[in-house]
Image (cartoon, rainbow, N blue to C red; front, side):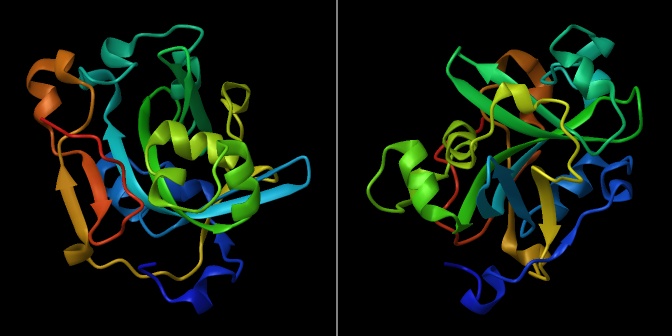
Length: 213
């Protein structure tokens, strides 16, 4: 693990709404690295350090579900005030968890692509049908959501808890520890596909194998 073990089990401060309502989605995506994503569904608590994020700049970003202010039953959650979850189904299989940011009607979002598991690992293994906590347990957005028990029914949930929230546990991430890359699976977005809006923690094995452009 990249971080000192003594930090991992200390409960931190839940990120306040004002963290999410800022205008710079790229800055927020970077600052989410090192924060701890926590779920507590049906009395089962699981958590992991965020190791990979991917920013989407809303109406002006061809890769965003909300490009051109497209409002559908699915994307309407993206137009809420920042600080809620946007979870959608990909390929009819994977439940992908995003953090909605910016103010109401400015549909920015950050896809959380991977975490380093720190709490409830036995429950994560059971959900994923695995025997040991190898990197594939939570590396990749579909695997991560499954391990944490996140489903499309959680779309629109507040990130203030009690079931789904993100904590600051004092883990420091230096700019030199962040790798910027292009996003995954958005070739249809033309020039916007080349935006370096995916961020990974350098040296952490719990990051996805997705290749950008």
